Image (cartoon, rainbow, N blue to C red):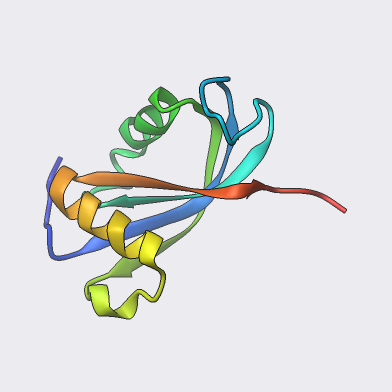
Length: 104
């Protein structure tokens, strides 16, 4: 993967919990996710990125939006800031919303 650690790409979407080892996530529930990656070729490597998420216990991964973040100071959420730093260090990082997606 080509990694440029100055820019982080945030792929937003959702995934379904597929494992019982997540204490706060119920299997079968869908949750909003954010995958932060330094891979500027994320479109070509989307299957590898989805495999990373599936290996963490998620399935039915769908991405809806991509945002390019060049400046950590533009992030206002502590969770996103720590995930941004983790992505810069490790190449990618996954953020999962604790509350499941519900349909009314």
